[in-house]
Image (cartoon, rainbow, N blue to C red; front, side, top):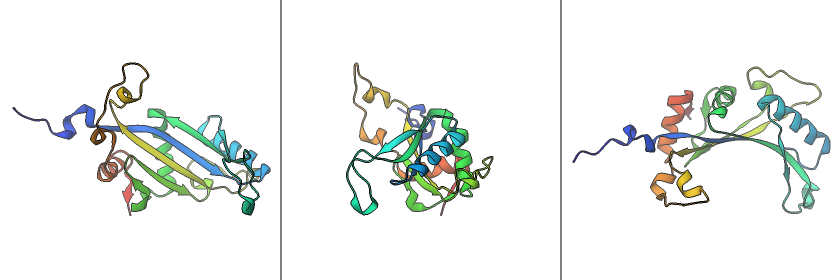
Length: 175
């Protein structure tokens, strides 16, 4: 009996699960509005507020206070935006930024993103970008009815495969 190579198996191929862009503003209400406006300009989607879960008196943050904004984009709709965001960091990410099932990096100034111009009302803001990956078939373990078992080896995408995917799809190199 002949076994297929993992790369030829369509169930072993990786795909983009979601892209999350996050801007932390702390307790400043003015910055909160600016962060929301900026995320809407970049993604074209309405951002959600990040709410603090605990009190932190050193940063003047109380529980339940708005401390940032974020946008989540799922699936292939995220692909063109991810390419722009990688281009903002010159298609290079740190080796430490790549984890199992994902990559996370920061953009210091939003004007580095192609097609985005400086807005004096917003000021200068940076952002965190998180991209997570998954394999086909994970829905079997996540659905509500007739839930099935998906082994850990299929759920977890090793760092090396994430690196290969990033270099092949987005021309990104790990430094």
